Amino acid sequence: MKAVISRKYNQTSTTGKMVVFDGDKLLMSCVTIEPPDNGNQVNVSCIPEGVYTIKKIYSPKFGKCFLVDDVPGRTQILIHRGNYSRDTRGCIIPGIAFYDIDGDGVIDVIESTKAMNRLLEILPEEFKLWII
Image 1 (tube, rainbow, N blue to C red):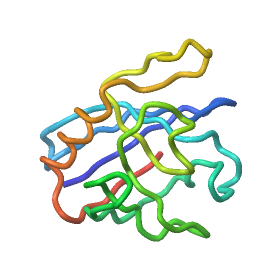
Image 2 (image 1 turned 45 degrees about the vertical axis):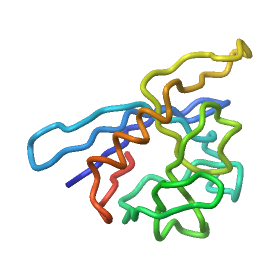
Image 3 (image 1 turned 180 degrees about the horizontal axis):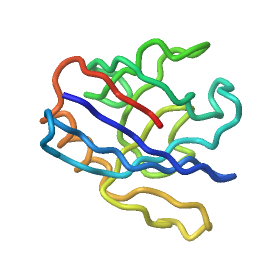
Image 4 (image 1 turned 120 degrees about the vertical axis):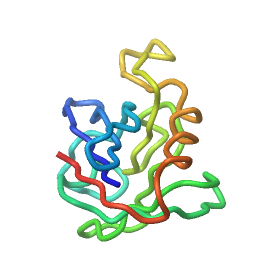
């Protein structure tokens, strides 16, 4: 099982497309939102591009989600439900599509719970995530 997030950077957020493969078979694609690239600063930046080990966990705040292991200089980076880039302090939020929900000019994601539930359903307890 392999997951890849390909990103686009802008001043207000980092948007991406996540694809999940089982061998050559595409199982799912969704969109992602993260904070902008602020040099990997804690709580205000997306994480650096690279390959990460991801583990399913239970978070008291977010419920079932994924932990992104071995982020340089960072801890407790999750893939969890949310809608706005302000819902994350460095974590990755999946969604079905991009949309400016609150009309503030900053892109958001919609149907995050739907995307997260599907990821939890198809991904194993541990897998690799490539962020490019």
